[in-house]
Image (tube, rainbow, N blue to C red; front, side):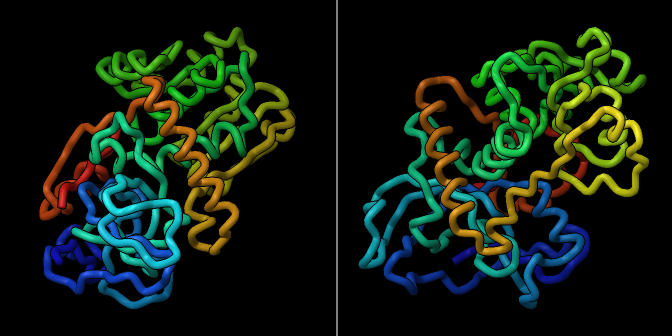
Length: 330
């Protein structure tokens, strides 16, 4: 089969479009999926730069997110039948094969039925960002109806679904964006207030919008500088959740505010083989499929590229200017 293979750690030149062995079912609980789309995520570009998250040697096929049609099932499979359309977050970290390929094989436990209203492109763009947003907002962030949440980079892959999930749970959503165009985009998703953070940052405006009380929950999807500045806009006794390492910081103000600081890394259950936690990930996808089929949740795919154009997709991700998600089409 054709696949994009990461041959070394470096720039996008290490992504090679080549023939590799087609995966086959090896366990009775596995399903074989003909991939119709693969999601591209920032973690893919970080692995390309920094190396695999397991100690297996290269080459490797990247891509955690996939969607496709079940074409073969193991003898013990009960959840799916041939012809079912599935979505999942599995592989791509250096142990199991990723989804920048024409086919993949995985245990039925880690897949769910796609929303009936989604195209394969939308489904492949969704799992990692939906699970990440859900974990940050509700599992780590404890967001409740009536509370205010500040979601940074609301036009991004995680941010644009986090806005919708927060609104579905009755929260007031403030979000930061980099342009008026992106502000219009996030307002179309339900954001109550938008803050264009260039050139003056966001703290003064967020404090104005919250009458200097701050947000009950702040969700940082950007990194250390944004995390640092977010302390000043998190309400006393509030929560500040980040996807990234905030680096070395002085936390005296966070301590005075009695903030609860947390991390969201949705890859942990995959990396540490925490099977019950992965079951919860699939349950999140099942709930989100219900929202999608009721017209309450959408995933924006800004670019659809051929599998051969994986390097171009990585360039777009690293430039940081894309609304929503990018997918590859095998």
